[in-house]
Length: 247
Image 1: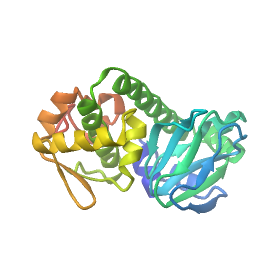
Image 2: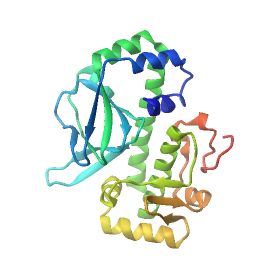
Image 3: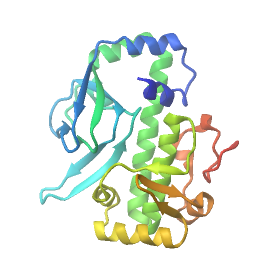
Image 4: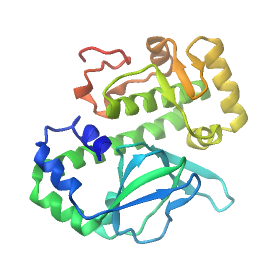
């Protein structure tokens, strides 16, 4: 739960004993291999999930087999909070890499939130961030060019990782297939490959064995109009162009 606690700590100051109450909730720890289902569209979800290790994807499938990835779930992310209402899932979730996750019964989770208002507030802020990410996804895919989409996604994922580690590192581990980036950005795998090559040639990024290194963060943020304020990570003390320091 350390990753979740670090993430929630960016929204509100929560006493350590309140987090201990969350850690003590009855739960199951489960693993999924890359590609395995976690949530299937149409099923009733009774649990809240917390990603502890690995990446997962939230997505929709079209009848002809095309996939639109809506969001990446990283360590520290909590989903599906819609389970507290007993609603059926309107999307799918599967493991993008090997995933370790914690499952907490939705009713037990909701009772804990009712007893600790400060915890409820922190999860509310987490839900606000997720909604903001989805809004940005609409703008990214609807109005940005291919190179802007790829650059913007790299900067977003880099910043979200920093929310858990507490450090803004120019390297982004990218443990998923490039095809998933294509499905998230609504462009072909070939187009993603060409776009990454262009980002390298224009000295925005450098490819590494495990992902990408951001070479010129400020110029890259300006090129793709990346403003991190939609992530609501004020306590990271990061300014909108991606450099450490006061907002």
